[in-house]
Length: 355
Image 1 (spheres, rainbow, N blue to C red):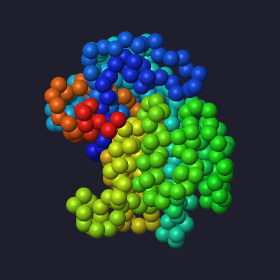
Image 2: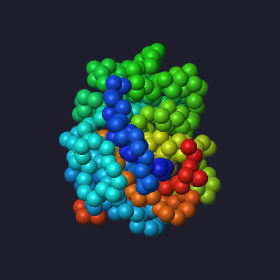
Image 3: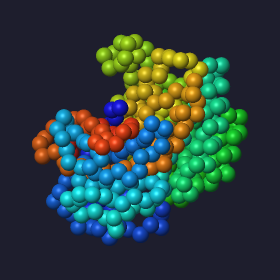
Image 4: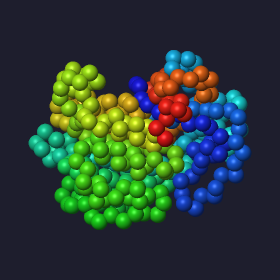
């Protein structure tokens, strides 16, 4: 599955920041000296056939190509539960003592809210399943809940409060109006995403852009669990599939998401085997490093795979190409294990970068 990423020049300071805890009281990294080796940073999720995370992988377990050329994986780090050593051949200084503790993850639940007859049952089922998903998260993980119908609405900033999240998912999201939301202690989404601006957002593409820009300054990779019923527009535009194409604002949103290291996992709750607007759901997942799942026939399977993806991810530090390619595809596969890899897949040289 193809997805997209923005490259970054790696220094020891960047390496330390990439795996640092996101808690406000975390001590600053001790590694400040820059090094001469430049790397491309790639976030990777690896799942087995049952949707469980593959842990214990090292650099030699991954095969990476940038613009069609083999790129050496210098080092890797697992970010998630049950810390795994930063392993194997490392050709550049790596932070810490060789292990990365669980720093806590930032997860956005975005529900495309619709109570139309062909959406209502799927939405209600998905909201209920998401309650179990929250219960399975780690104690340091933080979740924000947003909805989009005719505008973007914020129900809660990032929080660890499982009871508060459960109240929203059990009753509030379906039957109430969003409360007035205040910014939480850092890291905060609301600090950078004003609720009034959100309410003036009238397309899902613009909603993704605003969320991405709010997530961008926050450290590490982020996850957007998108429970939706469709994206895109009808009409042949040369960029779509059949009669579907990306809606205006999509490319801007996609670039903002990849710049923010925000991966979208699209879970389609439409009561139909196939529908035209699944094209957009598939595309935004594919191009940001996630996957698309439909919950009609086997509603528990997409949630199980999402739970596996949320349990942790690998950060690969890959040798930067020594040639100027502008923007090119990144391909990540497993070299020695069977499984499914979901990774960002566009490399941009610094001069092509949007940052």
